[in-house]
Amino acid sequence: MFMDTNLDDTGLFPNLARLERETVLMLSKILGSPRGYGYIVTGGTEANITGIWIARNRYLKNVKGRPEIIVPKTAHFSFLKAADMLDLKLIRADITEEFTVDVVDVEEKISNNTVAIVGIAGTTELGTIDPISELSEIAVEKNVHLHVDAAFGGLFISIMRLIGYNYPNIGFENPGVSTITIDPHKLGFVPIPSGGIIARSRELFKHISVKAPYLLSEDHETIVGSRTGGSIAATWVMLKYLGIEGYGEIFKELLELKNYLVKRLEEIKSIEIPYVPMLPIVSFKHEKIKSSKLRDKLMEKGWILYLAPMINGLRIIVMPHLNKKVIDKFAEDLENSIKEIEN
Ligand SMILES: Cc1ncc(COP(=O)(O)O)c(C=O)c1O
Image: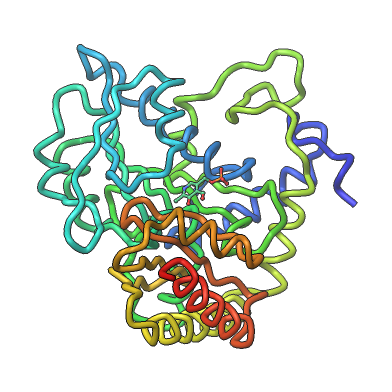
C-alpha cells in the first residue's frame, strides 16, 4: 500500500510523516524516552553514519585538530565508512576478556579532538553488550557525544528489560546517551529496509539539517533523499501488532532455542563456546580446525554460516524460523563435518 509514497518531502505526505513520528516515538519509548526524535532509515549502516554525522557537527567547533571517534574493537564496519566519509580519525578501544569494551581504555583514549565515543548493545559477531551506563558517565564528564549502536540488540534488550528480565539499561535513561541505532529489520522482524536512528532530542538533528528550498517541508535531516513509506508503515504495523508483550513472547522463545543450541553444541567435545551472550546469537569454534575450513565443509552439507573472526569461530543468529529439529540436524551435520575433516 505504501510502495508509491515518498518521505523525501514530509510536506507532500503529511499523514505518512505523522506515521513516522509515531513509529519513532514507539521506538524511543522502548529506549526509555517519550521525547526522542529521529527517522526510519535504510538500516544500521545509515543510522550509524547519521549518529556520527550529528556528533561530528555538534562538536566540530570544540576541536582544533582532525576530529576523532573512539569505537570498540568489536564495532561493525559501518563505522569505518562513517569515519571515511566524515573525515574522522577512527580510534579503536580495547575489549576485555568478556568481549565488551574496556571503559578505562576508552577514557584514556579521549583527547581534545574526540567528538564521539561509541558503545555497542549487541555486537555483530558475539552479541556482547558494552557497559553503556559507564560510557554514559564518561560522555557526560568529558563532554563528548555517546552513540549507541543497538542495531541488533536494541529491541531485544530493552523489551526484555521492560517485561521484567534482568537486562542492562542501554537507552536514554543514561544521561550521556545522545543517539541510538535500533533496527526494526533485525530483531524487530520488519522487512528490509527498516533501520532506526533516534536522538535524545530534536535539537540534535539541527546539526545536520540542510535547507531544501523547493520542497514543501523546507528542511532535510536524512542522508538519503527519497525514502519509501513502506518501511515506516511496516515498522508501525509490527510494533502495533506485536507490542511489547508480543515481542517479549517471541524473544523468550528465541532464548529457549538459543539455550538448546548451546546445549547441543556443548555436547560435541571438541567445540568451544567462548562466550554465551544474553542475545539470541551463538558463536563457537573447534579446538583445532580452522573456522573457514569448518564453514566450507558445512556449506557442502547446505549450511551457510558466517565467520566470527573475533574468536576465530563461526556464528549462528537464532531467529524464529529455527526450531529444535533444525538444531538437532545441524548438530549432527557439524559432528559429521568434524569427523570428515579429521579423517
Ligand atoms: C551491530 C550492528 N550495527 C550495524 C549493522 C549494520 O546494519 P545494516 O546491515 O542494516 O546496515 C549491523 C549489521 O549486522 C550490526 O550487527
